[in-house]
Image 1 (cartoon, rainbow, N blue to C red):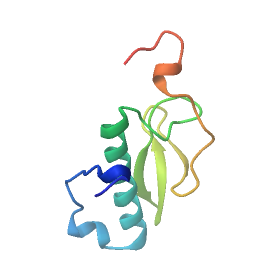
Image 2: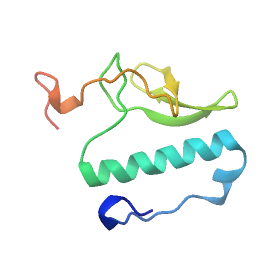
Image 3: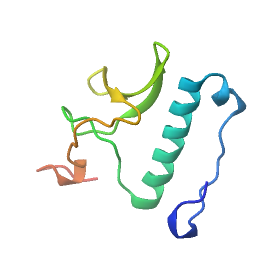
Length: 95
């Protein structure tokens, strides 16, 4: 994957990621999220309730963001949840 400024991130996607549209969307979102985390050292998107990073998943035939901290869905991919604060911005939290 090539990001802005020519920054490269490898890894690729497994062939199984193209099995159906929802699986493909979740796989691409997770790959982009990982690339941006490595580049920026910041997790996005965040759960608006917990302020922690979300995980791209395929669930019930759709691609969405999942909060592992609260075990709940947090919105569809392409429609990020309300902006939460980065964990580093919360009082008393340090990475």
